[in-house]
Image 1: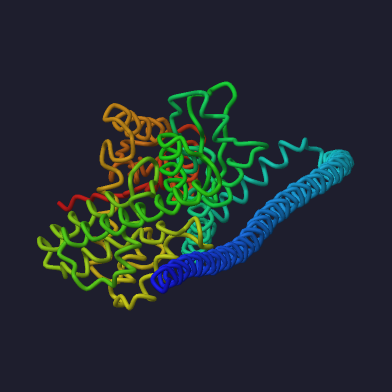
Image 2: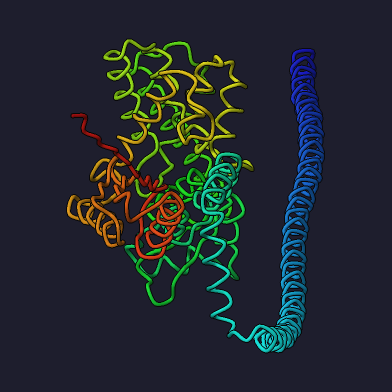
Length: 510
C-alpha cells in the first residue's frame, strides 16, 4: 500500500512537473514573441520616420530646382526684353536720322536754288556794268582786258616776279604743312580709291547652310558677333560663298575673321560660344603681334625698346598703305638706313630706330585722332625715345626740317622702300609707264628743252629755254604742269615739279 502510494505520488509529481514545465515554456514563448513584435514595431516606426525625412528632403530639393529654373527663365525673358528695347531704340534712332537727313536735303536744295538765283542776278549785273564800261571806253571787254594786261606786264613784270617769289617763300611752308596734314589724314583713313582694301576682309563659307546659323534666330548670332568684335558683318545674298567683314581697325577685322573661320569649322554657333571663340582669337592675334614685333627688333639688333612699344611695332603687321605691309616696309627701310648710315658715317643706331618707328603712328591711326606723324611723335615721347630719333622719324614727310644727316637718311630710306618697283603693288611696266607719262606731260609745253622724272617719279626736273621762258612764266609753267599731272595721272604721295631756267652770258676779249 505504501509502495502504491509512493508510486502514485511520484506519478502525480511527474505529471505536475510536466504540466508545470509545459505552462512555463508557453509563458516564456509568449514573452519572446511579444518582445520581437515590439522590436519589429520600433523598426517599422523608425523606417517610417526616415521615409518621412527623405520625402521632405526630396520635396525641398524639387522646390529649389523649380526656383532655379524659374529664375533662369526670368533672366532669359529679361534679356529678350532688353534686346527688343535696344532694337526698338536703334530703329527709332535710324528713323530720326533719316528724318534729319531729309530735312538737311530739303534745306540744301533750297539754298542751292537761292544761290542759283543770286548767281544769275550777279551775272546780269556784271554784264550791265561791262556794257557801260565798253560804251564809255569805246573798247570791248576783251580788248580792254588785254590792253591792261599788256601794260601791267610790261611795267611791273620784274616787280611781280619778286612778289611772287617772296609770297612763295613766306607761304610755301605753311601751305604745304596744312595740305599734307589734311591729305594724309583723309587718304590714310577715308580715301575712296583704296578704302575697301583697307577696311574689309572676307571669309569663305564652304557650306551655304552655315549662313543661316551665322545669322541665328532673328539675327541674334550675327548681332552678337558685331557687338563683341566691333566690326560690321555683311552677308551678300548674291554671293553666298563668302562673308564680308567691314571695319577701320585692321586688328579687329583680323579677330573677327579668325573667330568666324573657327565658328564655321566648329559648327557650334551661339552667343556663349561666340564670346569664347572671339576671346581665343584676340589672344592668338595678340600673340602674333608680340611675336612679329619681337622678331623685327631682334633682327635689327634693338634691345632697349619697352615691351609695349615692341607690341605697337608688331601691330603694324596688320596695317597696309597702298597695298604695302607697313611692318615689312618699316623693317626694309630700317635695313636700308643702316647701310646708308654706315657708308655716310652717320649714327647707325639713331638711323635704324628712327626709320623703324617713322610709321609707328599708323599702328593706331584708326583709333586716335590726327595724322600718323603726329601720333608717332606722341608714341615715341611717351616711351622715352630720345629727341634725336623723334625728330629724325618725324621729318620723313618733310613736315619738319632735316636738322641731321640721320633725318635725311630716314626720308631717303622710306622713299626707296616705298617707291621701288613692286613695293606698292605696281608692276615694272606700270612703273616705267608712269615715269614716261610724267616726262611726256612736262615736255609737251612750249619752251621746255628736257624733262627728267627722278626719285621714282616723286620729282620732275624741267629745263627750259631762257629766251622763251622768263622767271614769271617759269613759275606759271610749274603750276600748269602740276595741275595737268593731278588731273591725268594716278600716283602715290606727292610729285614735285622743279623748273630750271639757266641764263649764260658769253663775251670774247680780243
